[in-house]
Amino acid sequence: MSDPETVPEVAARCLGVDVPASAFLTETRIERINAARYEGQEIAGALHVVREDDRVLEVGAGLGVVGAVIAKNARPEKVLSFEANPELVPVIRALHQMNALGDRVELRNQVLFAGADRPATMAFHVRNSFLGSSLLNEGGRPSQVVEVPTADMAEVLAELRPTVLVMDIEGGELALLEAMDLAAFRAIVIEFHPEAYAVTGMRRCKTILRAAGFEKVEEVSTRTVWTCVRAEGATPQAAGGTAPR
Image (cartoon, rainbow, N blue to C red; front, side, top):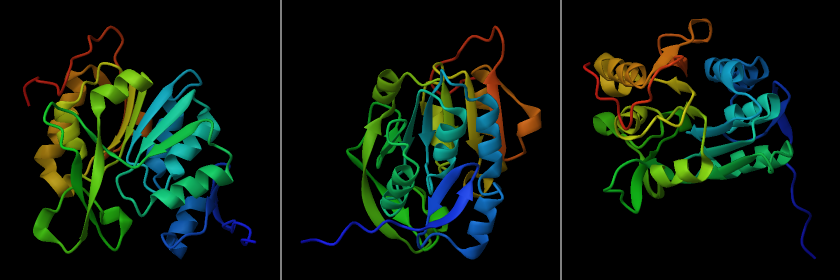
């Protein structure tokens, strides 16, 4: 007879969401989660714009806290989360199970790719800190390289019909914004990573968003985390935003 399945203990709690103990939770991170300061700008922005009739596409789930808080508090129709780092997947699934969110949140261990030349897999660099793990390998830092399956962005958009995009992918957002079609979204919450592509890259991200008809919501935005909504009467612009930089 097999042993009963081990239930992880609750290590932290964020806005009604229990977070299971894991090797990724330092004492400082637990304190930040309890105070709703872990990814706090993204959470505040998402709760400001997500409604019950929304379908949320989350690109970069991290520990799963942001998507779970959105699902628990804003109660959208669905949250579809993508996370490339395979080491985080069991932790995220445990969080979803602990909070009984299986009917509202779906997790896929894939890399979203926009474009016709999609490879079957992409190299993902897993580092000691999950916050430093990325598709990018700027500076050639040491990492464990794993091949992660890709998913076609256009197919995902057609399947989910999302209305809100939440994206934090440690520098990969510039390439994705340049290639993807933003026409489906009425609101976007995004973290920029100028350390990966410099200030010019961050400005390019913002130019793409403005060209697609989005305006920053000042009260829940900072220099590096934007919550934006489509301006009234703005005409959605397809893939990548080709307005002048």
